[in-house]
Length: 518
Image (cartoon, rainbow, N blue to C red; front, top):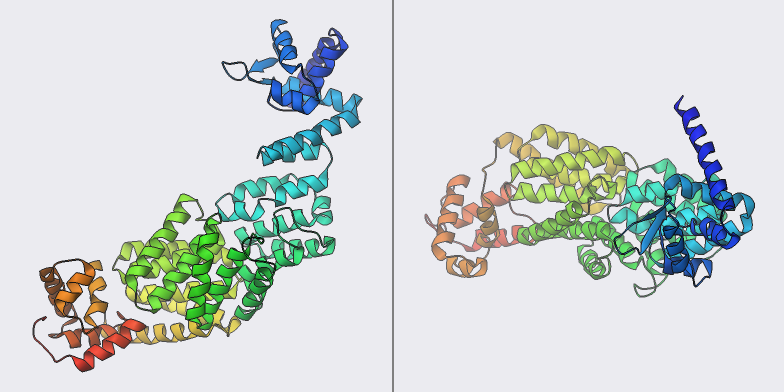
C-alpha cells in the first residue's frame, strides 16, 4: 500500500537524518536542527531567530560540504529552505530531544513572522509552540477585514487549524468564527460562536482592536438585525459609543449599518448623513463601502435622482467585482439595488442578471435577517415592474410581505411595498410599459420642472436639438402630445418617483398643453 511505502521512506529518511547529524560537530548539528524551525530563511533571519551572528558562515559551510538537502531559492544565495521531508524530520528531531527549545524558537518565530505581516506563517508557528492564545489572536486580528474584502476563504482556512478547545477558551477565535458565519449566512454558527465568546469573555480588548466582546457582538448584531430595525440601531450605537473612527476600528462599519436602518424607518435625511459620514473611513472595508453606496443609491432613487443612483451603483458593483465579493451574503443589497437601477435605465438584460445574483444570495440568507430579506425582495419586485415580469414581481411581493411581517418597524419598506403592489396591478391592467432609452430616462425628470429645453440642455450638457428630439420620442412612446401630459403619464406609470413626482405635479398644473416640445 502507498501508506506503507511512504512509511518506509520516512523511516529511511529519518535514519539518514540521524546519520547526517551524527557526522557533524555539535554546533553544526544544532544549527541544522534549529534553522529548520523556519520553512524558508536567510542568514539575517536566522541570526535574529537563533541569537547567532554566524548564520551566513554556517550556511556557506553547509553548502560547500555538498549537503543536498539545503536548497537555494534565488540566484543571489540569500534565501534558502530544506528539502521538505528533511526539514520536517529536523524539526521532529528538535521537538523530541529538546521540546522546550523547540517551543521557544517556534514562539519567537511566530512573533517575528507576525511583525513581518506573515499571519499564516505566524499562526503555524504559534500552534507548533502550543500557544493557543497567540493562535486565537492571530486568527482574530484580520477576521472582519478578510470577510469584507473578499478573502473569507483565508479566514475559513485559518479557523480550520484551531481545535474546539481554542474556540472555547479564547474570545478572539470564537468571534472570528462568528464572522465567518456572517459571511456564509450560517445562523447556527453565528449563535454558537457568540455564546462561546461571551462565556470566555474576560473583559479584555480583542486582537483586532475591538474594545470588547460586547462591542464585537453588537457589530455582528447590527448586520443581522435579529430583533428588528430598532435593534440594529441600538447595536450600532453600542459600537459607535466605544469611540470615533480614530480609536474604534468599527465606527464606520457600525455607522453604515445605522444609516441603512434609518433609511428603512423612513428617516432619509439622518440616514444619508450617517452613510456619507461613514464612507471616508471604510475604504479598508470594501464590503461595507459597497453596502453604504448601495443604500445611498436607494435613497437617490427615492429622491428621483437616477443619475446619482447610477454613479453609486456602478461604484458599488465595481468594488464587489474587483474584490470578488459576489458570494458574500451581505452583498445582496448591492445586487438588488443595481437590479432596480438597471431596470430604471432600460437595461433589461443587466437588470435580470443582477436579479439572478440577488436571488442566489437570498437563498443563502434564508431566515437569518428579515431586514435584509425585506429590502432585497422589495427591490427585486420593483425591478420586476420595470422589466414587465409579472410572475417575478408576484413572487417577490409575496416574500417581501412575509419578511415585512417579521420586520414591521421598517415603515419605508412597507410603503414602498404597497406602492409596488399598486403599480403592479396598474401595469397588469395596462399591459407592457413603453421602453424608454437611458438618455430619455435621464431627460424625463427634467421635463417635470419649469426649465426650458435650452436650460435642460445646459443642465445635461447636450444640444437643444438633442433634447427636443428625445422629448418628442418620449411623447410618442407615452402616446401623449404635450410636456405636461408626458409628465402625468410618466408619473402614473411609475417612471417618476419621490422629488421627481412632486416636480411632475407642479409641471402638470403649470404647463399649458402643447403639441410639440418648446
